[in-house]
Image 1 (cartoon, rainbow, N blue to C red):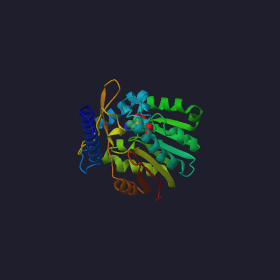
Image 2: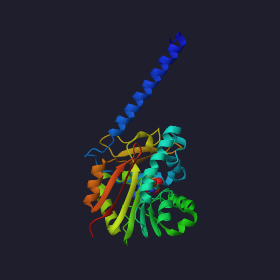
Image 3: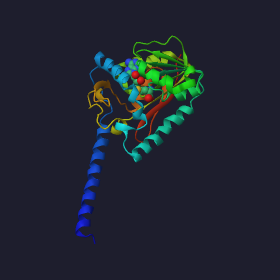
Image 4: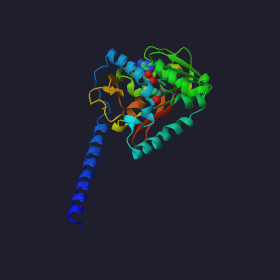
Length: 275
Ligand SMILES: C[S@@+](CC[C@H](N)C(=O)[O-])C[C@H]1O[C@@H](n2cnc3c(N)ncnc32)[C@H](O)[C@@H]1O
C-alpha cells in the first residue's frame, strides 16, 4: 500500500510525468505544423539582409548549436540522440563518390567543410560572413590550403566553372520558398553532368533550435533569432515534406533522394541528371 506522503509523492510524480507528456505532445504537434503551407508572402529583402547580419554576429557562438552547448543544451539524453542521429548524414556523405572539385554553399564555421576538404582535392566555400569564413579557415588548419574562401551573397553569386559536387548544410531552410527554384537552378548550373549533390538540414523539431526561440508559425517563413547577448534578428526558416523537396530538385534537373533521421535531421543525396 502507498502511504500518505508516498501517495502524495507518487501523485505529484504522475502529474509531472503527464505534464511532460502534454508538453512533449504539443511540441510534436507544433513541429508537425511547421511544414510549409503553400501561400506564405515573399520574404522582404530586409530579412535577407538581417539574416546575413545575424550570422556575422553569431559566428563566434555558432558552434554552441551543433555541439549542444549553452542555450542548445537539452540534457544528456537528448544531446546523445542528436550526436547519434548526426552520424546518419555524416556516414551518407562519406559514401558519396570521390569528387575533385566541391562547391560548398554557406559553409559557416566549417563543421562540414572539414569533412569535404578531407574527401576532395579542392573546395570552394561561398558564405556572406567574413567572420564565419575566418573561423572556418582557423578550424581547418592545414586542410584550409585545399579551400578557396569566397565572401559573397549566394543569391547574387554566380559560378564561373563546373564542379563535381555541390554541398549545402543547414542552408536550404534559410532560402525563401520563392527563391528555391532559382537556387536549385544555380546548383544545377554549377554541376558538371552527372555531378553529385548532398545537403543536410534540420527537421521542424523545436529542440533543433534554442529553447528561447520558436520556429515560424504556419503562413510565415520568418522567425526571430536571438544571440546570447539578447540581440534579435529576423531570418528565413522553411521546412518541406521530403516528396515536395524531391520534386523541387527534380524541376531543376537534380535527382535527389531525401531522407529524415528519427528526430532532428533531413538530408539528401543525388546527382545532376540533365546536361
Ligand atoms: C545555419 S549556417 C550553416 C553553416 C554550416 N553550413 C553548418 O552546417 O554548420 C548558415 C550560413 O549561411 C550564411 N549565409 C546567410 N545568408 C547568406 C547569404 N545570403 N549568402 C551567403 N551566405 C549566407 C551564414 O553566414 C551562415 O554561415
